[in-house]
Length: 298
Image (spheres, one colour):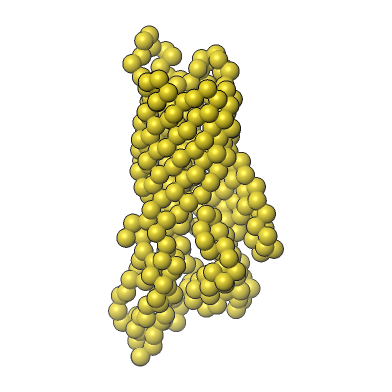
């Protein structure tokens, strides 16, 4: 089976990876052209998991939400994860017209670049394409926060980029959420605590990649001068689907990835200056990773 363009895979790979170059993109299309939709899903699954982990990082960095003091901050965030060894392979299923005589572990898109040959009945063979030998996945996102009403803060993320490819179209990330102070209801609370929720949608083109994530979170922090350590516990959900076109029939194929549901643990710290805040954190969620950011505002 050969695909004219497995645009879903190309779109996902463009998110923070070094696969955006023409040569790498063409290689990815060639690799995916050897896979049916189910194996394409297994091949790309590590990138879906990484996208879940990075989008849900660097959202909540404090439990200190002023009750009535106006706040306004513009933030730049960078989020990254490191892949586990288990992410580097998957177990493929037999495509139509092929019956395997042995089980193999095939590389995922982040796995070994060497193809794996699977033996089949009557001397047939099936080639499973190699990966790109990736160890990390990183994306960046701007974030705006506005607070000062009854201990509540509004959060917004938004970015729109023209990918410069007629097949890919635009990349759009939009997120909206908020935090509400819980410690304001207690006299002399030992730490600042706030509950938060954040919804984000991520799209490439017209249906090529359509992902959404929802995070529920409780964050506690304590300020010591300019230093403010924080700990967060949350729950993430992540859904993603996409479509591509089969070359032989021209039929549109829809691929829906398994939903990601994960407990999200965050440990981090902030440096609070007059108009500038720096933060860094470690996240354990769909994948483990780190994030950092710079905020400017009041």
